[in-house]
Length: 325
Image (cartoon, rainbow, N blue to C red):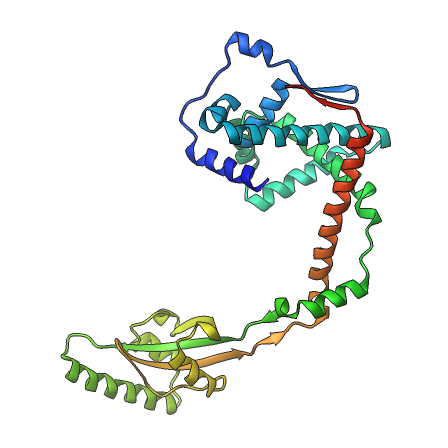
């Protein structure tokens, strides 16, 4: 499936600025049956339509680009269509219903999550050759399938507390929060002087700024006035860094500091830095109560995938399916 996804991505990136239209003879054969699922059929027209929907290209164009990838995509999409026919049959058998209001709510969620207006959505669907009504029908079918899966699969899943605890104990390194420091920096740079003169002048300026800081003047105001480095406009605030991201010299200095402390001037090849440690968040292990839901979701998704695969296999084993190519 990963290869198929990559193939789709490549198709989008390399899609040409023209479309292939079937000749009357090909259009005629596009209605031939490619698969039988119980008492329903899947036509070549339906298969080609789904391939274009997913890739944005006509299948004939896909085939010209890469025969092997085209055949792989066609096989996987046909299998998904067979599974859809099987689940739709089960939906009808069990009488699963989804209301128009539920469909509206799902579409609103999709628009909200993707920052789309109604006009944006309709325009995007039009580009893919999909009407809004047919899109609503697809969402309705998806919701019905989710209800079916919830009934047939999810409602039967039980995750034990002892499994969650065991996972936590075996994977503690996954729940370690790396140590972070919040820094503000005043950067003084040599400009327009010889190295010797510039270094001496810069050192005197750094000593003067440090004296002002020790006298109670605000670090942020002095950074805005004198700093030539990042974050100067924000009072020298350069945000959080993982301790491992700091160069060894600065890391050693930070280790000796407490929140609120200001360093002595630090010589750099390009100038001098004065660093303030705003906050120090030490490395810590998240307690199990904090990560229990995340671990539950790991088990839950794994169990859903396993049970769904077994459930769909059972449906296929009991069904009459025949692929015709």
